[in-house]
Image 1 (cartoon, one colour):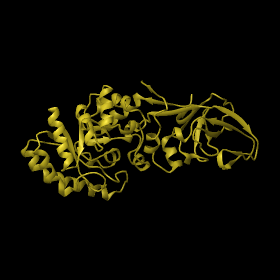
Image 2 (image 1 turned 135 degrees about the horizontal axis):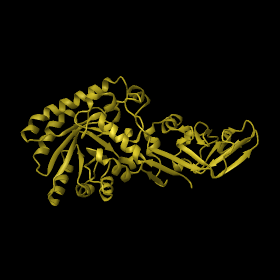
Image 3 (image 1 turned 30 degrees about the vertical axis):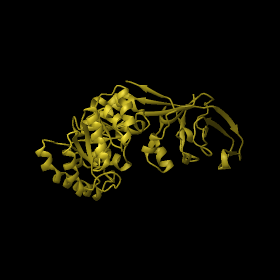
Image 4 (image 1 turned 90 degrees about the vertical axis):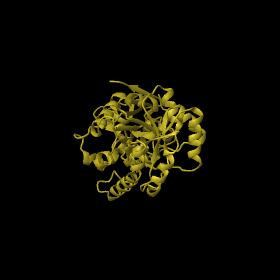
Amino acid sequence: MIGELRISLGALRRNARALQNMVGRGRAAFVVKSNAYGHGLTPTAIAIEGFAARICVFSAEEATTLRDGGVSAPILILGPVPPESLDDALAARAEIALWDTRSFLHDLAAVARRRSQRFGVHVKVNTGLNRFGLEPGEVADAIEDYLRLPELHVAGIYSHLASAEEIDSPYTMQQLARFERAVAESTPMLEQRGTAPIRHVAASAAAMLWPQTRLDMSRFGIALYGLWPSPQTNEAMGREALALEPALTLTSSLAVTRTVAAHQPIGYGNTFVTPQEMRVGVVPMGYFDGVPRALSNRGSFAVGGARCPIVGRVAMNLTMIDLTQAPHAEAGSTVTLIGRNGDVGVTADEWAQWAQTINYEIVARLPAHIPRRYEDD
Protein backbone atom coordinates (compact mmCIF):
# COMPACT_ATOMS: atom_id res chain seq x y z
CA MET A 1 0.00 0.00 0.00
CA ILE A 2 1.41 3.37 -1.00
CA GLY A 3 -0.99 5.23 1.23
CA GLU A 4 -4.60 5.54 2.33
CA LEU A 5 -6.87 8.25 3.66
CA ARG A 6 -9.45 7.17 6.22
CA ILE A 7 -12.36 9.59 6.61
CA SER A 8 -14.67 9.36 9.60
CA LEU A 9 -18.22 10.09 8.46
CA GLY A 10 -19.26 10.10 12.09
CA ALA A 11 -16.80 12.88 12.86
CA LEU A 12 -18.10 14.91 9.92
CA ARG A 13 -21.67 14.54 11.14
CA ARG A 14 -20.77 15.40 14.72
CA ASN A 15 -18.91 18.50 13.55
CA ALA A 16 -21.86 19.51 11.36
CA ARG A 17 -24.27 19.04 14.24
CA ALA A 18 -22.10 21.06 16.63
CA LEU A 19 -21.77 23.92 14.14
CA GLN A 20 -25.49 23.88 13.39
CA ASN A 21 -26.24 24.00 17.11
CA MET A 22 -23.95 27.01 17.44
CA VAL A 23 -25.75 29.13 14.82
CA GLY A 24 -29.23 27.62 14.88
CA ARG A 25 -31.13 25.04 12.89
CA GLY A 26 -31.47 25.96 9.23
CA ARG A 27 -28.66 28.52 9.45
CA ALA A 28 -25.56 26.42 8.71
CA ALA A 29 -24.19 26.02 5.19
CA PHE A 30 -21.30 23.65 4.59
CA VAL A 31 -18.52 24.21 2.06
CA VAL A 32 -17.38 21.08 0.21
CA LYS A 33 -15.46 22.74 -2.65
CA SER A 34 -12.02 21.46 -3.71
CA ASN A 35 -12.90 17.81 -3.13
CA ALA A 36 -14.28 18.70 0.30
CA TYR A 37 -10.92 20.09 1.38
CA GLY A 38 -9.34 16.78 0.40
CA HIS A 39 -11.91 14.63 2.21
CA GLY A 40 -13.91 13.57 -0.85
CA LEU A 41 -16.67 15.65 -2.42
CA THR A 42 -19.73 13.41 -2.67
CA PRO A 43 -19.28 11.19 0.42
CA THR A 44 -18.76 14.28 2.57
CA ALA A 45 -21.82 16.06 1.19
CA ILE A 46 -24.01 12.98 1.64
CA ALA A 47 -22.83 12.58 5.23
CA ILE A 48 -23.72 16.12 6.30
CA GLU A 49 -26.56 17.20 4.03
CA GLY A 50 -29.15 16.57 6.74
CA PHE A 51 -27.67 19.48 8.70
CA ALA A 52 -27.17 21.81 5.73
CA ALA A 53 -29.25 24.84 4.83
CA ARG A 54 -27.01 24.96 1.74
CA ILE A 55 -24.10 22.92 0.43
CA CYS A 56 -21.54 25.28 -1.09
CA VAL A 57 -19.25 24.39 -3.99
CA PHE A 58 -16.98 26.42 -6.24
CA SER A 59 -17.97 25.23 -9.71
CA ALA A 60 -20.88 23.98 -11.79
CA GLU A 61 -18.93 20.74 -12.28
CA GLU A 62 -18.91 20.13 -8.53
CA ALA A 63 -22.65 20.82 -8.35
CA THR A 64 -23.32 18.33 -11.15
CA THR A 65 -21.16 15.71 -9.46
CA LEU A 66 -23.14 16.09 -6.24
CA ARG A 67 -26.49 15.74 -7.98
CA ASP A 68 -25.25 12.71 -9.92
CA GLY A 69 -24.14 11.25 -6.59
CA GLY A 70 -27.59 11.57 -5.07
CA VAL A 71 -27.27 14.78 -3.05
CA SER A 72 -30.64 16.53 -2.79
CA ALA A 73 -29.86 19.46 -0.47
CA PRO A 74 -29.81 23.01 -1.90
CA ILE A 75 -26.51 23.80 -3.61
CA LEU A 76 -24.86 27.21 -3.92
CA ILE A 77 -22.02 27.74 -6.41
CA LEU A 78 -19.67 30.34 -4.91
CA GLY A 79 -17.23 30.63 -7.82
CA PRO A 80 -17.65 32.12 -11.29
CA VAL A 81 -19.79 30.11 -13.69
CA PRO A 82 -18.74 30.55 -17.34
CA PRO A 83 -21.63 31.00 -19.80
CA GLU A 84 -21.06 27.55 -21.28
CA SER A 85 -21.68 25.98 -17.84
CA LEU A 86 -24.93 27.79 -17.06
CA ASP A 87 -27.06 24.98 -18.50
CA ASP A 88 -25.32 22.48 -16.25
CA ALA A 89 -25.76 24.70 -13.21
CA LEU A 90 -29.47 25.11 -13.84
CA ALA A 91 -29.91 21.41 -14.58
CA ALA A 92 -28.30 20.73 -11.20
CA ARG A 93 -30.84 23.08 -9.56
CA ALA A 94 -27.95 25.08 -8.18
CA GLU A 95 -28.04 28.69 -7.08
CA ILE A 96 -25.17 30.80 -8.34
CA ALA A 97 -23.23 33.85 -7.21
CA LEU A 98 -23.96 36.95 -9.26
CA TRP A 99 -22.06 40.23 -9.46
CA ASP A 100 -22.62 41.20 -13.11
CA THR A 101 -25.00 43.62 -14.79
CA ARG A 102 -23.81 43.18 -18.36
CA SER A 103 -23.61 40.36 -20.89
CA PHE A 104 -23.39 37.54 -18.35
CA LEU A 105 -26.71 38.63 -16.85
CA HIS A 106 -28.40 38.32 -20.24
CA ASP A 107 -26.79 34.91 -20.81
CA LEU A 108 -28.17 33.84 -17.46
CA ALA A 109 -31.70 34.96 -18.30
CA ALA A 110 -31.54 33.37 -21.75
CA VAL A 111 -30.59 29.96 -20.34
CA ALA A 112 -33.39 30.17 -17.79
CA ARG A 113 -35.94 31.09 -20.47
CA ARG A 114 -34.80 28.26 -22.72
CA ARG A 115 -35.19 25.75 -19.91
CA SER A 116 -38.40 27.34 -18.56
CA GLN A 117 -36.81 27.59 -15.12
CA ARG A 118 -35.73 30.36 -12.75
CA PHE A 119 -32.17 30.88 -11.63
CA GLY A 120 -31.70 31.44 -7.93
CA VAL A 121 -28.90 33.94 -7.43
CA HIS A 122 -26.93 35.21 -4.44
CA VAL A 123 -25.73 38.77 -5.02
CA LYS A 124 -22.04 39.08 -4.13
CA VAL A 125 -20.94 42.33 -2.47
CA ASN A 126 -17.28 43.33 -2.33
CA THR A 127 -16.86 44.78 1.16
CA GLY A 128 -13.07 44.81 1.19
CA LEU A 129 -11.60 41.47 0.17
CA ASN A 130 -11.37 42.91 -3.35
CA ARG A 131 -11.80 39.74 -5.35
CA PHE A 132 -15.32 39.20 -6.68
CA GLY A 133 -18.42 41.27 -6.07
CA LEU A 134 -20.29 44.47 -6.72
CA GLU A 135 -19.09 47.59 -4.96
CA PRO A 136 -21.48 48.49 -2.13
CA GLY A 137 -22.69 51.60 -3.94
CA GLU A 138 -23.61 49.51 -7.00
CA VAL A 139 -25.70 46.91 -5.19
CA ALA A 140 -29.09 48.66 -5.10
CA ASP A 141 -29.06 49.47 -8.83
CA ALA A 142 -27.88 45.96 -9.69
CA ILE A 143 -30.63 44.35 -7.61
CA GLU A 144 -33.18 46.61 -9.30
CA ASP A 145 -31.95 45.23 -12.64
CA TYR A 146 -32.13 41.66 -11.35
CA LEU A 147 -35.66 42.11 -10.04
CA ARG A 148 -36.84 43.19 -13.49
CA LEU A 149 -35.95 39.78 -14.89
CA PRO A 150 -38.64 37.16 -14.18
CA GLU A 151 -36.08 34.45 -14.92
CA LEU A 152 -34.13 35.32 -11.74
CA HIS A 153 -34.91 34.89 -8.08
CA VAL A 154 -32.73 36.88 -5.67
CA ALA A 155 -32.27 34.16 -3.06
CA GLY A 156 -29.39 35.70 -1.16
CA ILE A 157 -27.05 38.63 -0.65
CA TYR A 158 -23.60 37.90 0.71
CA SER A 159 -19.98 38.88 1.14
CA HIS A 160 -16.74 37.34 2.41
CA LEU A 161 -14.56 38.60 5.25
CA ALA A 162 -10.83 39.13 4.98
CA SER A 163 -9.49 38.84 8.53
CA ALA A 164 -12.18 37.36 10.76
CA GLU A 165 -9.78 34.82 12.27
CA GLU A 166 -8.00 37.65 14.08
CA ILE A 167 -9.13 38.21 17.66
CA ASP A 168 -8.94 41.99 17.30
CA SER A 169 -10.17 42.85 13.82
CA PRO A 170 -11.65 46.33 13.28
CA TYR A 171 -11.61 45.54 9.55
CA THR A 172 -14.19 42.79 10.10
CA MET A 173 -16.58 45.29 11.64
CA GLN A 174 -15.91 47.73 8.81
CA GLN A 175 -16.77 45.05 6.26
CA LEU A 176 -19.94 44.14 8.14
CA ALA A 177 -21.00 47.79 8.24
CA ARG A 178 -20.42 48.19 4.48
CA PHE A 179 -22.47 45.08 3.83
CA GLU A 180 -25.33 46.16 6.07
CA ARG A 181 -25.47 49.58 4.38
CA ALA A 182 -25.65 47.96 0.95
CA VAL A 183 -28.45 45.67 2.11
CA ALA A 184 -30.35 48.53 3.73
CA GLU A 185 -30.29 50.54 0.50
CA SER A 186 -31.75 47.55 -1.35
CA THR A 187 -34.35 46.54 1.23
CA PRO A 188 -37.27 48.80 0.14
CA MET A 189 -37.35 47.49 -3.43
CA LEU A 190 -36.93 43.91 -2.22
CA GLU A 191 -39.84 44.33 0.18
CA GLN A 192 -41.97 45.81 -2.60
CA ARG A 193 -41.39 42.59 -4.57
CA GLY A 194 -42.04 40.38 -1.55
CA THR A 195 -38.46 39.12 -1.65
CA ALA A 196 -36.42 38.45 1.49
CA PRO A 197 -32.95 37.23 0.47
CA ILE A 198 -30.78 35.28 2.90
CA ARG A 199 -27.94 37.46 4.19
CA HIS A 200 -24.61 35.75 4.82
CA VAL A 201 -21.05 36.93 5.36
CA ALA A 202 -19.59 34.62 8.02
CA ALA A 203 -17.33 31.66 7.35
CA SER A 204 -15.98 29.42 10.13
CA ALA A 205 -13.83 31.95 11.99
CA ALA A 206 -16.34 34.78 11.84
CA ALA A 207 -19.22 32.61 13.02
CA MET A 208 -17.11 31.53 15.99
CA LEU A 209 -15.51 34.83 17.01
CA TRP A 210 -17.98 37.43 15.77
CA PRO A 211 -21.58 36.31 16.50
CA GLN A 212 -22.95 39.54 15.01
CA THR A 213 -21.74 38.36 11.57
CA ARG A 214 -23.87 35.19 11.58
CA LEU A 215 -26.91 37.02 10.14
CA ASP A 216 -29.27 34.54 8.42
CA MET A 217 -26.71 31.88 7.54
CA SER A 218 -23.05 30.98 8.17
CA ARG A 219 -20.79 29.09 5.76
CA PHE A 220 -18.60 26.50 7.44
CA GLY A 221 -15.60 25.13 5.56
CA ILE A 222 -12.51 24.20 7.56
CA ALA A 223 -14.45 23.69 10.82
CA LEU A 224 -16.62 21.00 9.22
CA TYR A 225 -13.51 18.86 8.86
CA GLY A 226 -12.59 19.22 12.52
CA LEU A 227 -9.85 21.78 11.94
CA TRP A 228 -9.65 25.28 13.39
CA PRO A 229 -9.41 28.37 11.17
CA SER A 230 -6.44 29.55 13.21
CA PRO A 231 -4.71 28.76 16.52
CA GLN A 232 -6.13 32.01 17.92
CA THR A 233 -9.65 30.87 17.07
CA ASN A 234 -9.09 27.57 18.83
CA GLU A 235 -7.74 29.31 21.91
CA ALA A 236 -10.56 31.85 22.01
CA MET A 237 -13.34 29.31 21.60
CA GLY A 238 -11.95 26.62 23.85
CA ARG A 239 -12.42 22.94 23.16
CA GLU A 240 -15.21 22.61 25.70
CA ALA A 241 -17.26 25.36 24.07
CA LEU A 242 -17.02 23.74 20.63
CA ALA A 243 -15.70 20.23 20.26
CA LEU A 244 -14.36 19.59 16.75
CA GLU A 245 -13.02 16.21 15.64
CA PRO A 246 -10.48 15.92 12.82
CA ALA A 247 -12.12 13.61 10.32
CA LEU A 248 -9.04 12.56 8.35
CA THR A 249 -6.27 10.05 8.97
CA LEU A 250 -3.45 9.53 6.46
CA THR A 251 -1.44 6.31 6.69
CA SER A 252 1.15 4.40 4.72
CA SER A 253 3.54 1.56 5.53
CA LEU A 254 7.29 1.23 5.60
CA ALA A 255 8.65 0.03 2.27
CA VAL A 256 12.18 -0.60 3.57
CA THR A 257 14.12 -0.33 6.79
CA ARG A 258 17.90 -0.12 6.80
CA THR A 259 20.74 0.54 9.20
CA VAL A 260 22.88 3.48 8.17
CA ALA A 261 26.35 3.91 9.63
CA ALA A 262 27.37 7.04 11.53
CA HIS A 263 28.36 10.15 9.58
CA GLN A 264 26.56 9.10 6.39
CA PRO A 265 24.30 11.38 4.32
CA ILE A 266 20.65 10.53 3.72
CA GLY A 267 18.64 11.71 0.73
CA TYR A 268 19.14 14.35 -1.93
CA GLY A 269 21.61 17.13 -1.33
CA ASN A 270 23.20 15.47 1.73
CA THR A 271 21.12 17.78 3.95
CA PHE A 272 21.09 15.23 6.80
CA VAL A 273 24.10 13.32 8.07
CA THR A 274 23.63 10.57 10.67
CA PRO A 275 25.16 11.60 14.01
CA GLN A 276 25.51 7.92 14.93
CA GLU A 277 24.43 4.57 13.51
CA MET A 278 20.74 4.88 12.80
CA ARG A 279 17.83 2.76 11.64
CA VAL A 280 16.02 4.53 8.86
CA GLY A 281 12.63 3.74 7.35
CA VAL A 282 11.56 4.61 3.80
CA VAL A 283 7.93 5.73 3.47
CA PRO A 284 6.62 5.45 -0.13
CA MET A 285 4.98 8.89 -0.14
CA GLY A 286 6.46 12.24 -1.08
CA TYR A 287 5.49 15.61 -2.40
CA PHE A 288 3.57 14.04 -5.31
CA ASP A 289 1.39 12.51 -2.60
CA GLY A 290 0.83 15.72 -0.67
CA VAL A 291 3.78 15.66 1.74
CA PRO A 292 5.22 19.19 1.53
CA ARG A 293 8.91 19.31 0.65
CA ALA A 294 9.14 21.93 3.40
CA LEU A 295 8.79 19.10 5.95
CA SER A 296 12.33 18.00 5.06
CA ASN A 297 14.38 17.64 8.28
CA ARG A 298 11.55 19.35 10.19
CA GLY A 299 8.46 17.18 10.39
CA SER A 300 7.76 13.75 11.80
CA PHE A 301 5.47 10.78 11.26
CA ALA A 302 4.34 8.22 13.84
CA VAL A 303 5.34 4.54 13.88
CA GLY A 304 4.73 2.02 16.64
CA GLY A 305 3.31 4.64 18.99
CA ALA A 306 6.37 6.90 18.65
CA ARG A 307 7.21 10.04 16.72
CA CYS A 308 9.84 9.45 14.08
CA PRO A 309 11.52 12.56 12.64
CA ILE A 310 11.83 13.08 8.90
CA VAL A 311 15.48 12.91 7.89
CA GLY A 312 16.79 14.24 4.62
CA ARG A 313 14.77 15.89 1.89
CA VAL A 314 11.23 14.80 1.09
CA ALA A 315 11.41 13.40 -2.44
CA MET A 316 8.71 13.14 -5.08
CA ASN A 317 7.55 9.69 -3.99
CA LEU A 318 9.58 8.88 -0.87
CA THR A 319 10.24 10.23 2.61
CA MET A 320 12.84 8.86 5.06
CA ILE A 321 12.31 8.77 8.81
CA ASP A 322 14.49 8.04 11.83
CA LEU A 323 13.26 4.80 13.50
CA THR A 324 15.33 5.15 16.68
CA GLN A 325 12.19 5.51 18.80
CA ALA A 326 10.43 2.62 17.01
CA PRO A 327 12.93 -0.23 17.40
CA HIS A 328 10.45 -2.94 16.42
CA ALA A 329 9.38 -1.32 13.15
CA GLU A 330 9.96 -3.37 10.02
CA ALA A 331 8.99 -3.26 6.37
CA GLY A 332 5.20 -3.29 6.30
CA SER A 333 4.76 -1.51 9.64
CA THR A 334 2.05 1.16 9.62
CA VAL A 335 3.17 4.77 9.33
CA THR A 336 0.71 7.46 10.40
CA LEU A 337 1.40 10.69 8.58
CA ILE A 338 -1.66 12.52 9.96
CA GLY A 339 -3.73 11.10 12.79
CA ARG A 340 -3.34 8.96 15.90
CA ASN A 341 -0.86 6.09 16.23
CA GLY A 342 -0.98 4.50 19.66
CA ASP A 343 -0.54 7.20 22.27
CA VAL A 344 0.87 9.80 19.87
CA GLY A 345 -0.53 11.78 17.01
CA VAL A 346 0.54 14.01 14.16
CA THR A 347 -1.85 16.75 13.07
CA ALA A 348 -2.49 18.73 9.92
CA ASP A 349 -1.86 21.82 12.04
CA GLU A 350 1.66 20.57 12.80
CA TRP A 351 2.30 19.95 9.12
CA ALA A 352 1.15 23.51 8.45
CA GLN A 353 3.47 24.88 11.11
CA TRP A 354 6.44 22.93 9.77
CA ALA A 355 5.67 23.98 6.19
CA GLN A 356 4.89 27.59 7.21
CA THR A 357 1.43 27.47 5.69
CA ILE A 358 -2.15 26.85 6.88
CA ASN A 359 -4.03 23.65 7.57
CA TYR A 360 -6.43 24.43 4.70
CA GLU A 361 -3.62 23.97 2.19
CA ILE A 362 -2.36 20.78 3.82
CA VAL A 363 -5.62 18.86 3.54
CA ALA A 364 -6.90 20.42 0.31
CA ARG A 365 -3.72 19.37 -1.52
CA LEU A 366 -3.96 15.71 -0.57
CA PRO A 367 -4.27 14.30 -4.07
CA ALA A 368 -7.16 12.36 -5.52
CA HIS A 369 -4.96 9.36 -6.38
CA ILE A 370 -4.66 8.44 -2.70
CA PRO A 371 -7.47 5.95 -1.94
CA ARG A 372 -10.08 7.18 0.50
CA ARG A 373 -11.85 4.76 2.83
CA TYR A 374 -14.98 6.00 4.56
CA GLU A 375 -15.71 4.73 8.03
CA ASP A 376 -19.05 5.09 9.78
CA ASP A 377 -19.69 4.89 13.48
